[in-house]
Length: 454
Ligand SMILES: Cc1cc2nc3c(=O)[nH]c(=O)nc-3n(C[C@H](O)[C@H](O)[C@H](O)COP(=O)(O)OP(=O)(O)OC[C@H]3O[C@@H](n4cnc5c(N)ncnc54)[C@H](O)[C@@H]3O)c2cc1C
Picture 1: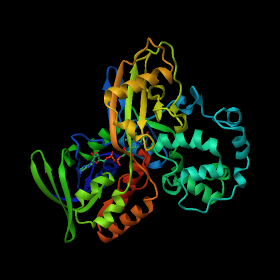
Picture 2: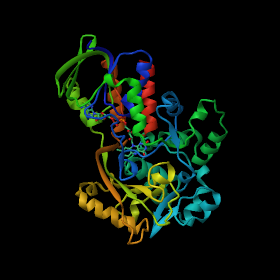
Picture 3: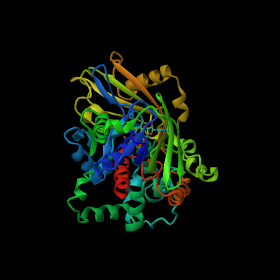
Picture 4: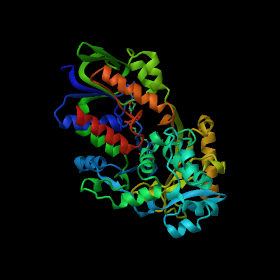
C-alpha cells in the first residue's frame, strides 16, 4: 500500500465524510482517520424494540443548497426525507402544559406566552435603532428589540433547542450570524424578513427549502452512504495517538491502530475534531495559540430516547416542545420524531427524544442512569400527560460530553488564531464545528466548500 495521500482527514463525522466525498469525486487520494470503531461521529441511529431513534442530532434544516445537492448525489443509496406537516407545530412549555408557538398574526395576538406589553412593543420593532455593539449577546439583542417575554418564552427555548446554551453568553454575531446580518443590513428583523421575501432567488437558491429533514430510515443512512461512496478502504477506524507534524513541504501523520503503529504522508491535512482534541494531535502549535482554540466551551447533553408501543389514543402532532429555563423544569425539551418521519415507532406508538443538561443545567448530566430514567419517566407523565397505567416500552440513554460548541466571546480570538495558523502552515485546515456553524447543514456546507478549494 502506498502511504502518500493527497489529503488526510481527521474524523469520520459529517464534516469529514462530506469533504472526503467531494475530494474522492475529484480524483483525490484521501485517507480518513477515525478514533471510534464506527463512522458517523455525533450522528448515530439505533434500532431497539421496534423503535428507530437517533442518539445525536434528530433533524436538520435544508438551509443551504449544498444539503439538497449532497442528498441528490447520494441517491438512491440514501434518500432525503422531509418532515411532514406536523413539524410546523412547535410547542413551548408554560405553567402546566405545552402551548403552541404562534405561527401567524392571529395566534401571535392571542398567544398566552407573550405579554400584552411586548405584543404592542413588537409593533415598534421596525423603528427600534440598530445595535452598535458587535459583541452583543443574543439575550441583549432580544431584550433590546423584542422584550423580556420574547426573551424568556421564545429566544431562551430556541437557544436551548439549537445550542443547549445560555443566550446571555452566546454572541449574536457568531451564534446567529443570519439574524445579526438581518439587523445590521435592514435595521430591523421585520423589515429584513419582508425585504428577504421579495429578493429574487435563483433555481439553486430555491434548493435551500428551509425544510426540516432527516435521511429515510435515520441519519446513519446518510453517513453510511457517504462512507460507501468514499470507499470504506479509505477510512481507518479505531485509531489512537494521532500526531500531525509539518515535514519540509508535506505533512507527516503518525498514529496507532489495533494492528500497530503507522506513519503516513499527505500534501494536506484537514482536522474536523473538537477543540479539546487538537492540543494532542498538533503538538507543534505554541500553547499560547492553542489555548485560544481550546478555550471553546461545549454544552454537555444527555439525550434519552423513549418509546411507547401504544399511546392509547394520545396524539403528538408536532415537532416537539421546548422548555424555557425560567419554568425551572429539568428538561431542555422533548422532540416527537415519530410524528414527523416514517418508520420510527410501531403503528400505534410514538418515539420521543428527551434532552437534559446544557450550559444552564450541566449538573443534571452527572446524574446516574437510574436517576436520569426516573426523571424522564416523571416528565413522561407530567409533561406529556401519559396516564399512570402507560409506561415507556423503551428507554435509551446517550451521553455527550462535548455536544455543542458555544460561540461565545472567545470566538473572535479563536477564529483569528485559526486563520493565522492556516496561513503560517499551508496545507493545514482546521475545520469542524469549532467554526462556521454547529448544525448538520453547516457541516455539509463547510465540508463541501473546503473540498472545493483544494
Ligand atoms: C445531542 C446532539 C444533538 C444535536 N442536534 C442537532 C440537530 O437537531 N440538528 C443539527 O443540525 N445538528 C445537531 N447537532 C449537531 C450535529 O450533530 C453536529 O454539528 C455534527 O454531527 C458534527 O459533525 P462533525 O463531523 O463536524 O463532528 P463529529 O460528528 O464530532 O465528528 C468528529 C469525529 O472526529 C473523531 N475524533 C475525535 N478525536 C479524534 C482523534 N484524536 N483522532 C481521530 N478521530 C477523532 C470523533 O470520534 C468523530 O467521529 C446535535 C449534536 C448533538 C451532540
